Image (cartoon, rainbow, N blue to C red):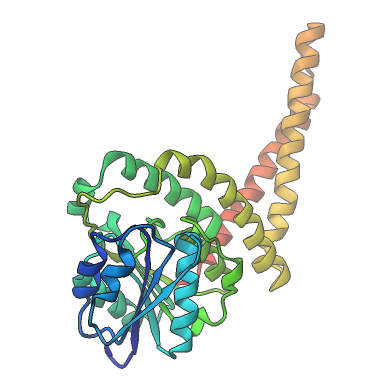
Length: 311
């Protein structure tokens, strides 16, 4: 227990034979329960876990690999059955420092937030240790995730070192959250729909000799389209279904107006270039005005969304 909270640590494990023992063995005494999900590892991960004698430990096994998100959802469901107050996600690769765990819990208690996540970009020294390709990928994904999730004040969404209150976990539709490495990004989207409060915590990362199964090139190719899909879902759920907001109105008016202005302007330019007749001032304004007004409406929608970000 820590500051009146019962704490469970959820660990999704896949091909973690070399690291899982040290990860579990270094978890501090403040952790009440440890739930490890062996996501159908083909190596000796299960044997290593079975050899541990930690009374706090519960091991769940998947018959087939469901991905890190699928393993986390299994762990979260079990943690809720244990009736704990907070669930902390710790990866099995040893990149998350157990000494930083109290910082996540302090953030929940001190701010009253529902979800605390590590942010490696708030630690200047940690940035020098981050591989450059991973740094670039995280910056790009962070901006897209800000827009999709509505949490404009948080950064480093790929950092999976997080702590979440069980009270808001019970309100989440876990089945709707992604099963793969998109899990952390998707979790933020669903938390925003529920207006969950999220706080960033400075958190240095540890990079050893382990190899990540997440490929940056694949992530940058697939995640943007998925994030745009989640953006539409969040706007619809939060600003239309749950409480109609000017954000939805500005988007519904601004996007078509801006698109119409661009299309009309392109058509007018093509016709002018084809006939050699300079477009009239009126025709130019018919293109420019919808673009300007549409852009202003979209900008207002973004500003209102930023202002509405739960803090």
